[in-house]
Image 1 (tube, rainbow, N blue to C red):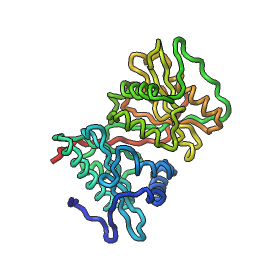
Image 2 (cartoon, rainbow, N blue to C red):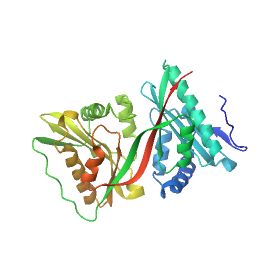
Image 3 (cartoon, helix red, strand yellow):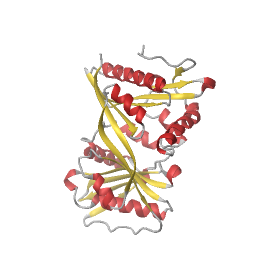
Image 4 (cartoon, one colour):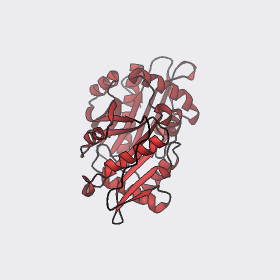
Length: 320
């Protein structure tokens, strides 16, 4: 494959290996700290990404190394579902490397689309709003902003009272068997099918992805039932424990027919109480401002505040 730009002299590209995690984490942490003042992931996050279920690192990962085999850029192409939507990620301080990686990941995205028989595909990528260089590069290549994400946080300075369970609601803590995991997955699919960039994963891959994560445990999933039907779900992880000493609400959703009954607020206050009881400094979550529900207002109403803004950029491209 030939790109319109060349890698700088002394740079080569290869597939990422599990043994690259430490060096790759150092590169990414330095770049993130430069952009937002802190790192936003752990080495475990990077290591898990390299071997994530559904990701073929030998075909879809591009590690650019310079002198001393030191990482200077990293690109990922991740096919979602039937590859009608493909996610890409490009990280590098060097403009020439970032441009090369963008072209390379886009080329691989088109290959995925052709392999699945599509005439065109949608390519998505998420970046920090503070990354002006990346924003300019994406705009130059025809990407446009599709949505904005706010990272929200609330601090806990002492005990937080447990909320009262809403009338008629049964709380199921943990998804410890196959039946509970099927229910959890089906609830997520029903709630998020119209969300920006959401593409369902096969159930087995969805289970494998969560089971392989060092920061997730099935006991951290909570379902709410009404008349025996699962109507709301909260999925928590330890994804922000190392970096922020905070609990993390990775997923929060309520079936459309049961919205407006205070179920989301209950699950938030419940998470705050559990995190405070565990001695954590706060609770963090991310909200899509393109959400069909007024989610940002909900989180602000329970005392959360925005601390970081990211953007989802999108381009529809023919595969030829």
